[in-house]
Length: 153
Image (tube, rainbow, N blue to C red; front, side, top):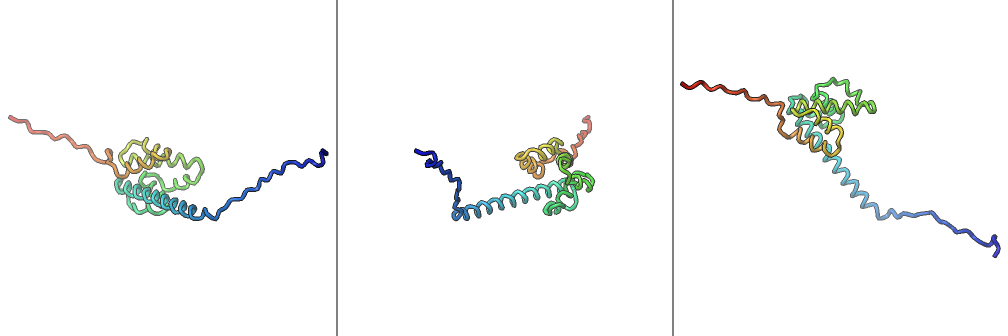
């Protein structure tokens, strides 16, 4: 056998993918994804609007409009509106959002560490945001003063 007659292996690395059947699955996935995103947005807006109502902040409807909802968050937190510029700077925006959520939690009558969890922990933030918006707030109600009973004779 001559070496010139030996043919090397023919490695064919071309793959074909039939996309004709993936259309309905892609449409279904896109529809479900869209519904989930809309549900998250509605939940977030309802929570932010309810927090604004709890803290007696005007314009609670800002929660439904992008960018205005950030201004509403700054108003609830009693922070200056120019902080929105700081939210556009990478890495600084993380610190600013933590500070804003800490102030929102305090304004709603919760501990400020709630704000840290809302800003940083992905799944816990939905639960805490709902508790902050729809739960009882201990800090906003004034404690009852003890009533004095007249001395009995």
